Length: 340
Ligand code: NCD
Image (cartoon, rainbow, N blue to C red; front, top):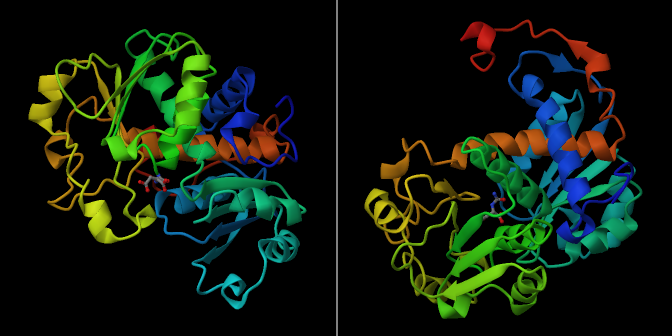
């Protein structure tokens, strides 16, 4: 992808390494706005249609926040039952209609391929906020951005890293998109740890080995993993045929202080796309790691705003104009260093 302006963002497969780096460069420029050191009105008058037909907290709110931080307005629909899709309207018709009301659309839907289908009826760019178990491209970008930032503090880049992904790798769209995007980088070692029934899809494993990366597949967290990144995930209970089916796997791979120290290096960065399932029978990422300096989960969520701001700016063709519309922040903010 050479030029983002007017493009849909549906899949990580649209990106080459230069496109990823372009997103990262623009995301870096968004930091002062996210920190409330200044604000911009570059998208004043623009409308985001934020359509979430599947449950979400951070993806939905961070898309909206990112758009607001650029000066735009957000219109939202949540849930299939409260939308015309429940009356039998096609994705194409919904897209035709809602794209008339918006300048850009973000969408999440429980079916694989649904966001791409929707985009065919849309007259404005559509960003995929997760289509069932398939893809979550904006999450992959914010995860990679976080990996780059976290490892930069150890003098490393994404190339040559060892990344462990743990948990539900079959239904987890974040790991599908992240693993695929890692194919753009060099000399990656990927350790995939999951129950045998919840392994990473073969097509993605093939893409990883075809990229020349080293792939290790295991159904146990054992010995010293030596990974630079430990990417923990939730059992995607909503994708199983029944809750009892999901219960079989819940709590199989937990991470807490003791398990972390036993299996990982002192410099291993801990990530999770969130939400973490904190119920006692799951507890895949224990609260006893909350103050651990290598726990990057909340830096990940903050980075999500920067990356989504960057994508909006690029898709709407204003990435070079952001600072032309700078304004001061005139309210008290705990975020900006002037008030800290
Ligand atoms: C993830 C998702 O929805 O795929 N959450 C997110 O977007 N940050 C992961 C999950 O729900 O487990």
